[in-house]
Image 1 (cartoon, protein in one colour):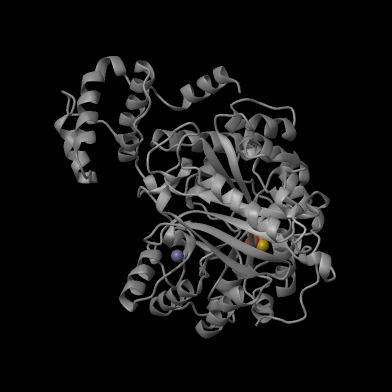
Image 2 (cartoon, rainbow, N blue to C red):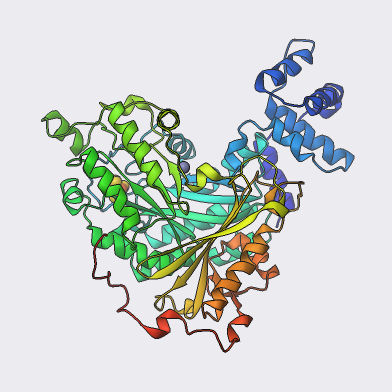
Length: 568
Ligand code: SF4
Ligand SMILES: [Zn+2]
């Protein structure tokens, strides 16, 4: 990677701390911060006020962090991760082990005509000015390189480790954009991470393998009817590892009344294709659409788990927001649509949360839009907290991944237990391998997918698939170690070994990982080699003569047709 370019890039984004002038102040503050046993925001403010400069100015946390990093560099000593954590502004942002960087594509017409979807001049379809990521994108004129670089700089300024970046591409339906634009967009994002330009997408991907800011995940948003075998192949070529899929409803009547332009059968088929290619799927689901009722929504939500063809890995619940300039608004004006009241919505969402199985993560319970846009209905920006309070009162519990993540707490790797949750889909057997603490918190997990029929992509023939592996705890720099932090406690290696063991016993000869470009070196160290867009390793123990043949060698269903039975 080009370090000189990197330095000059960051120099224009981050002003250095005047270490010569304020060294004494800085050292005194850091010592006090380190000594306090439990630092609260108020406690930190008191320390900062005690060490105000002669003109009354106090340092911000980002200035302190910058100063501390410079101090360590100058004195040639490693960063104290606990101290950095205390100085971080919003530690939760990188607690999932990776730094999320959301970027947005330029406005472009979407083939959909959804009744609830707003179109605002100068914004990609479905996004509104004032949504944080949309606003940031517009401020950078939707330039992918500028958006990525600015986001990395902002996360760094606030003390987060950004060595491992999950790139989240937002903005309408990705698959509807021209292919050349898609390729250019991803290349420019990678160039921002690499700190250097590349002549092609492949070159940018190659450089990212050794870059300081590695891409460890790439997600895009699309519609079920745009997911085809060719599209899946294109997504993989771009390095996509996760797809956000707008299903919205599992009722054809509701889909049709809301002019979604696709059917439940198309949703099931898209999920199946994506899963067979090893992609993770984040489903978007919308209660309170036109024609829905609270009881109907509850039954609809149950279908997500009862229908083997669905069963998503992650979920975003977006209660329908009534926005101006939409078809839904006109339905509301003529009395054909009514938003749920707060009590109904909170109760419904609480019930939904209790139904989510442990292999799924609920990422959102509402959209991050300014309440000024909402014409009628629930306008609470803190709806998630409301739902949590209600659940606590009712004695409800959510078992989703997000609610069980180990977060900042230290762990003892020796105490972790491995638990496997298995569930069938219409095309695979899924095994969710998880390491849990004695208290039941989740320290890491791996999604092992055992295809029951040949996958559509040639390079995956005969492979069991690792669709995701994640180890929790604060994101650590790639070289950093922190006692008690799970990210570098070898959990990843242990999960991979167990996945290989289980896949081998199930009769698979090879294990493939859908590795984001920046994680390829990690998998190489674990014996994987690149094959097409995947990392693949042979499974030696599957040569055992007692091993049964893989299930899809025994019985094979016609590829990509939904099973005969509908939702259970
Ligand atoms: S598919 Fe998505 S972006 Fe397109 S119109 Fe429907 S909701 Fe809007
Ligand atoms: Zn949860």
